[in-house]
Length: 420
Image (cartoon, rainbow, N blue to C red; front, side, top):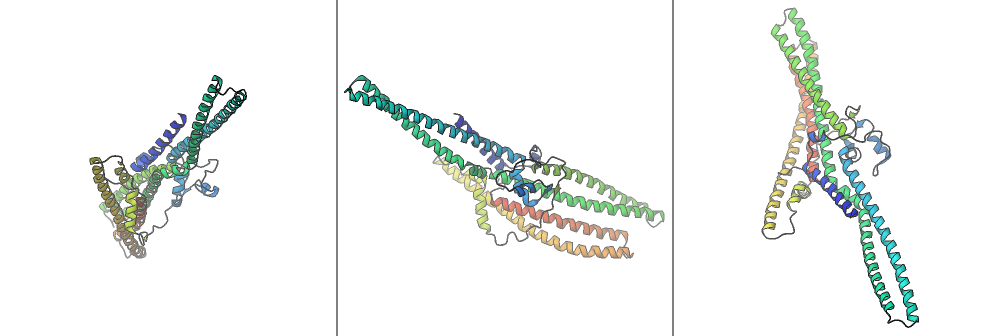
């Protein structure tokens, strides 16, 4: 009974993990998870080298480390893996205990069988094969042999259970795959959101600095009668708006940063660097078999798999299942096509913003030179400076959006996409 209970417990844990992966995790849900573990832990988990594990706690969160961070540092994933490990360990111990018990009982029965046979030999020597004592011994012998046969069968079954448990770690890792992918995707999205806000914050800081300069210059010019009070008030209004927006963005940055830290095994507010992302692969789609990717994505999607789950019925039930499953496959195909189309569009936007940034950089250098020589008015210089700041931010944000579009496609191929 204890062993059956452990088996059911493990099944429930794995089912919960699968359900978590299928449903998905929002940013709000992630923020409610409690941090556990983190830097300073002793011992190296299985499956990772000492050097790689140390890199996960070096005070810098790298894009390339996210999968290992989820496996070894994420508190949510750790809860599930710990529960699975505990249950598997308990089940293995219980199986080994039962095997030992069965062997002891078989040995005891063998002793009884030998004793019965010895007694039968003595009766046979006395010519008492037809006696009541002989019949009782024969009945006991048959019962003992039958009991031994049952125990041997149970021992073989338990040996099979133990062999199965030896492969359970791999099976559990596969079962937790959807949860792992969901957490990786969520953390990647959080980091992309954080870096996007960082770019906006940097742009706003530059705008604040520019408006401060223009406002101070406007005040000086107004005193000399070279600018109107309306011009100065406009600069002041722009400065105040930029400061207010910057404050809002910085507050959002702090919230998302703490969320990222928690999911990476750190305490909120920890002194940790969230590293910049590598350059996005603008050639990601080149050479890919789009139709093969779509087929894989559809087959791996949990919603599609669930639509095919009815298999033990016939007639109208199966007919309805087939209609529903085919419709769900169509929706999955459409969802994948949309993800692929969004990626294609984002590649074009990123390339276009790269070109726009190159032009804006030339204009910006020219504006700095012309303004220093008095060849541009403040309003003209302001317009060209803001155009450059905006172009640079747009290019950087499109680069991040391309990262997100690539990850959306990559995880879609692994079945992680919304099908409605």
